[in-house]
Amino acid sequence: MKFIRLIVLIFLAAGWQSCSTELEVNAPYKETKVLYGVLDPTLPFQTFRIGKGFLSDGRSALDISKNSPDSSLFRPGNLEVTLFEMKLLSSGRYDTLQKVKLFADTINNKEAGGDFYAPDQMVFRTPLMQLDTLNAASQIRYRILVRNKISGKESEAFTQVPGRDLRITNPASINGEGPTGKESFELIPLLMRRTNPAIEARVFRSTHSSAMQMFFKWKVQNFFSADTTEEVWVMKSGIESNLIQAEASIKIGAGVFYDFLKVQSAQRRNADLISRRLLPCEMEVYAANQDFDNYRVVNGNYNAITQSQPVYSNISNGALGIFCAVNRKSFPVSVKLKQTEIDSINKYAPEMKLIK
Image (cartoon, rainbow, N blue to C red; front, side, top):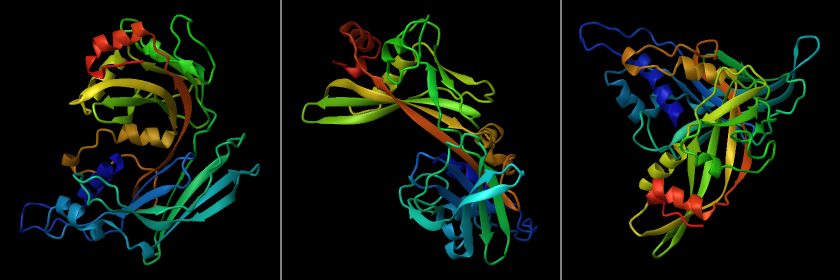
């Protein structure tokens, strides 16, 4: 998980110590919460990671973070974590619509090799709940409140969820060709153009959307000498950010599709491969809010060598991290390739061994 790497850099800053044995460089310990939460209304519940900064005890900060989880985690019973859903009233004040207590939980699928311990990670989760992204007035706001029941210190943050009214207004057409405004469209023939300008899709920018990105989830059926498997190959566009217009233009460079197929097929099982087939796929449009985009842009070049804390955080009162939100919508992509198109793909990406 990318956020784990970002968070460890914060912990390293707190745990940094001098090589000298004659000078005490650690300041007195000060409680610093490290919170990471991304609201996603397409999920049945919301998950937060809440840790703490720590001081070195004579070992390296990396050693502590990887082998001593208690150093970077609060005791679950010491924290009270609450998520509020609020609506702006005409008076200018907010009315609480939902107030949800989060509970401590453990996930056990973190990959080894990162800066933190694995495979277990303690997180805080909501019970099953539905976030509101349909409110026409766009006045819904979310607040996360974290209270340390031992010290009494509270930290909080606010954010808003991008609306779910994401829709394609011009689905990947070139020179006016191709259907417009439909939920299903032929995409692969357009992606196969190797010399034309970039493929462009125009997407309606929903409320509170500041950055958008497309993900293409290609379903691939593999035929081997003894078995058949299915996989999902994910291709993504660049991120379009600082959006202010009603529509966002998301582009994919000419020829990128072939490079994607070559790289993906080379990384897969090929020893006894007979052929592959592309099945109906889906395209997902992701939208992120301003808090997400600010954190991505400002902290994108954060370097552990500097031992400085990240510049941007919207968590207040003695805490670091980010509380933000994303939303997404899926669109079906039909796959009906002509033999000439299959021949073209096999020419430029022979590892595919593509068939109808």
